[in-house]
Amino acid sequence: MKKGSRGSVSQLNSKTSLYCGFTILKLPRKKPYNRQRYQITHTGHYYGIDFALSEACRTIDRIMSKKRFVAF
Image (cartoon, rainbow, N blue to C red; front, side, top):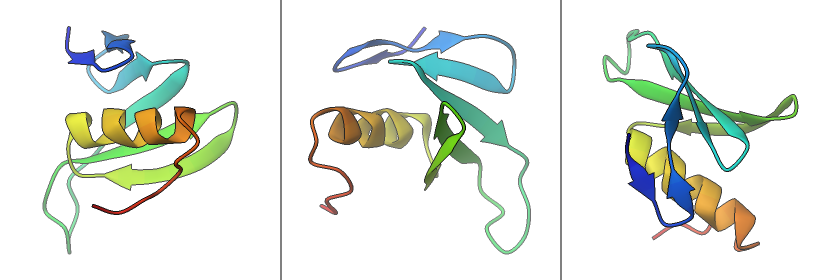
């Protein structure tokens, strides 16, 4: 179980995780990315794709702190 700044990531199965009420879905690798991708959703709303689980948790932390999608 991985930890983010707001809690831990609960893995439901090999493709689905929960973090702070958000669903993080592990997507299949496809061209042109050929990298692992993680889709973020919450109550049917789409919040984007990140290329690492830790990035997805950081995105959720920014959404929760109302900083939204500030690029670093």
